[in-house]
Length: 220
Image (cartoon, rainbow, N blue to C red; front, side, top):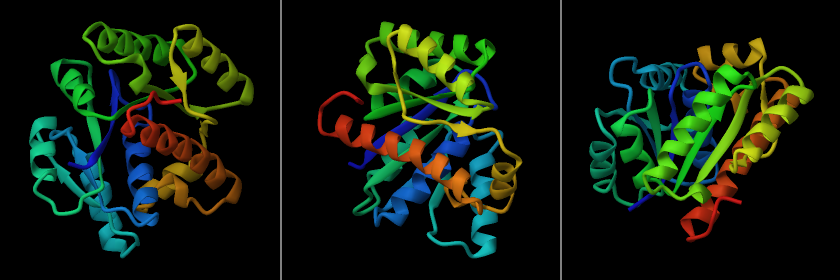
């Protein structure tokens, strides 16, 4: 069975799909066999991004499939020989499926912006998962669409005060990232070095946490 990293949120626009794609691309670059399970069958945004990437002939190629449930994605992934990593791009809502995704994953990533309109719902999702038995040590927040260092510091403090782990660094809000996504690229493939390094730092922190979690520890 492959390692599973799940990205979940209660709302859209917090970079859940953006981070899913970057995780998959960087894992593939590292030589891992990886698949993204797009669990939002109505929007299919990651599947559409995959089609754009394939049409542009970009490497590495990242397998992507739309599923109506985490269980279907996991069952299908188990049939793929030597699959190393399954990235679950969860639907933009908090419901029973979110809990199923979290229970199946080695690491659950909750992307969030810096505003309280993002932070409060994200913490409520995390609290709900913990109340249902998902260990807090398997939950990791990731800051994205951040304007300034001060915003990032304040958001990080808010989440840590709530008792949760936060990935190192943050993904800034920049038009260049949107342009990259529109061309089938991951945010770690953006043309500007400073932005690329910022994105790579967050993704590497998530990967490090996933490796620790897969070995039976907490996402530190």
